[in-house]
Image 1 (cartoon, helix red, strand yellow):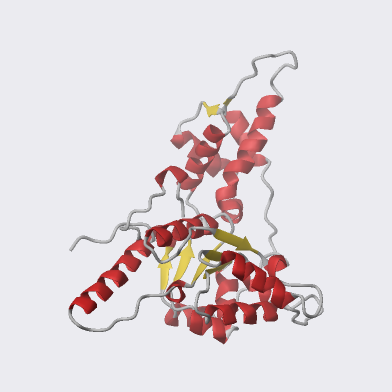
Image 2: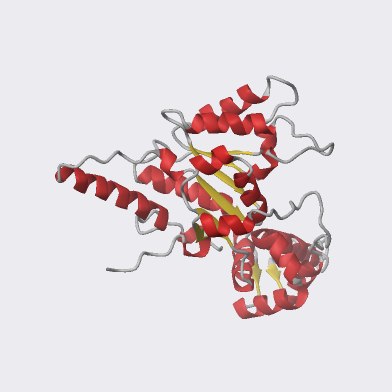
Length: 309
């Protein structure tokens, strides 16, 4: 999914906000008709974001916070981002208070748990540690009167396994899962262009030239593993290539990257590990079950406008 910062907007036609507006309209209509309908709580919007690194999950979580704040569901648009180490303690009795502190910090906003599946993964010795205690604390908070909106994020297969292996979470997360596909090569080219501009540089290549360079000098595996971070990495390596051509006495060094620089930037990208590693979580057998039983949205369509009546 590609969401350039300049295109982010809080219009109520964005899907998540539109859903909130619909809930509010239904409740308003029910009250006018003399029917009762409870006000939607933050608990209705706890959600799971599934996608590889660099596909935009954190960016979208921040945008969702802004939209739900604008819609009146959240009192603030703050997003508290945590990982396993932010929640889990090393010794008995540390995890509960540590997790609770983050919950309290995120109250009235969003608690974004990145790589949430790591909370339920066993240790190298095969034993589960205090991660399960953190999950229990999160579940308890979800049942409280004023919990933060919780967004759990991570690799697609790992997140499916995470939710399925924790029935309490499965029951509490009713919002359809949002799936983030890998970036297309055209989007990656745009991300690279934006990174170059952001850094105050320029390229003597047009969009199609950048696409060709990426296609010829990067592998499908590299693009899939790096996704949005490819822009920053290619730029940094390309800048090194440009610097190597500049004389030490040059007081007005060039900021124009040529095709050769971008090619060198691509060639310097790390090669992904071909076999399963500890950092890449294994697929889970629950994938087919979730695909059939849990509604899922493709993030590419998340911010598209609803069809006119």
